[in-house]
Length: 289
Image 1: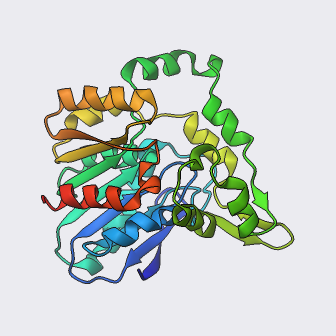
Image 2: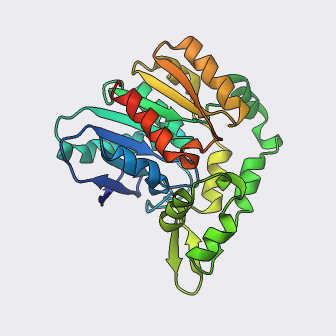
Image 3: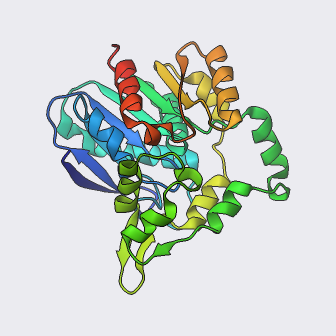
């Protein structure tokens, strides 16, 4: 899979970057990553999807090769910035069918894009999107500063550097969020979500504070946006993911007929545990197979 870099000086005052495949006339797939990752973390699955789609991969604020951009601009604005960059660059692909996919944080951003821009994509897959239940959102809005946030706390404690990539692989293999990942998926993360830093070895591109900022924030008007989606959507989540993801998926499918739900074996990062199965299910829904 050959990918070419792109960059976009966005209206928020920093540069978004990402990757795209060489235009070939195939349908175009827009992809956004999860919090703390980058799009090329998902190369095992994306390389399979590249057989049937051209790819537009967007690294969000502070992730991958995109600028840190100061304080996190929020979920809703980041979704709009992804659209801004895509619209600025997608003309090179011509008039082909356009689809969208996102994981976790990226799945939520994709859902916000679908609601705000119903004509932009023909179909979409949300992979284990962290759709906070309405009651949880209300609780966080009222008492967020008083409620302990283990995800943000864990992010701030995250180790940020290793002597080299092999040491990073050995230390992360089978641990935490990476438990159960295929070796090639973890190696893709090590290769693309870390950078070499003189005198420090390799360091995380996404600063732990940025990851924590995202865990401590939430989209505005999430459920209003979810119920406005007019695009056919398949929400796929892992059988062993966070309980609230399954609960929210069931709630959404009951309230918006455009959304159907599918469960695949694995956890929150099921597509990193079995890239082939995930890729087949994404392709099958997007292409109507």
